[in-house]
Image (tube, rainbow, N blue to C red; front, side, top):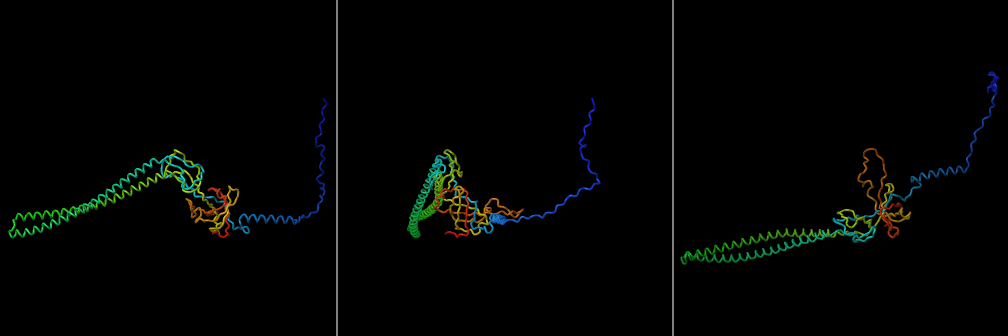
Amino acid sequence: MPPVPPRPDDTDNVTPPPPTDAAPAPTPVEPAVAPKYLKPSARSVVVMVVVALLGIALILRAWHLWPFTSSVMVTDNAYVRGQITVMAPQVNGYVTEVLVKDFQHVREGEPLLRIDDRIYAQRVAQAQATLDSARAALANSDQSQAQNRAQIASAHATLSAGQAELQRSRNETKRYEELAAQQLVSINDRDKFRTTQASAQASVQQSQAQIRIAEETLVSTQVARKSLEAQVESAQAQLELARIDLANTVIHAPRDGQISEASVRVGQYVAAGSQLLFLVPDTLWVVANYKEGQTWGMAIGQPATFSVDAFQGQVLRGRVQEIAPATGSEFSVLRPDNASGNFTKVVQRLPVRISINEGQTLAAQLRPGMSVIVRVDTRSKPMD
């Protein structure tokens, strides 16, 4: 085979560089161009100024600074309140009858439920028997006093008769003493009259002793009567307590209102003080927790408006009824101690009670616990 001739490399096609001693060609220099400044249009300036003013206005509005300060104090930390009564029994026992249903409207004095009263009825009968026994003992004491007074009167009569007999015996004895001294009567006759006088004297002393005994017996009976009177009063009190317990076996509504969910059931054993029902009264109000800085200028009687979240912003009217005497933190169980450690200022809130004006249809639909937004105009004059 004939030999293959070598292929030429790519370097064979490269033009050799010019000799190093040749001078480079001069680069042409362009003249410098002055920077151009665009002149803003009047519309752009107006837009920028408007945007800046809007930003400043938003900042002032957010911080309630001039000229956005308002006399209307608003807070959403407000709720509907009411005196919810916890219905609890005062006696123990089994529930025999539940007379209300869930969320039922009741009137004052209406019975709500009954507890088995058989034990308490027997306690009333027992207390009545104890009272009757004490009264009988007191009557017996009165009879004993009358008897003692009669004995005293009889003893006084006996004493009077004995004293008369003693005086007669003394006179007879004196006369016979004189006759015996003249030997006109025998010594035996004189001694008989002496004996009669001594017997009459003993009878008088006996009558006096009987009077003292009767008087002491009367005093003792009178002292015993005071004890019997105390027993009668104690028995009367026990009877009243038994009657109260018997009456407490029926729980009545203390006021008009609406019952919560009736969780108690027939046959359930309930203890005194256990929560059975909740009674929500018809009288409601609003408590608004204002920041302390918002209460400046707020006074009792100023008109207020509030909107309820559940009513889709519909407005109701009221007035400032009371302002709390201290902030909410002062009534907390664990009060903050700012005297030690690092201090961080926390804005305090002051509860303000808002009464609800009468004659508003929506007021009947209010329920305790509803969230509201309250507005109070501090520049308005208090209402009478």
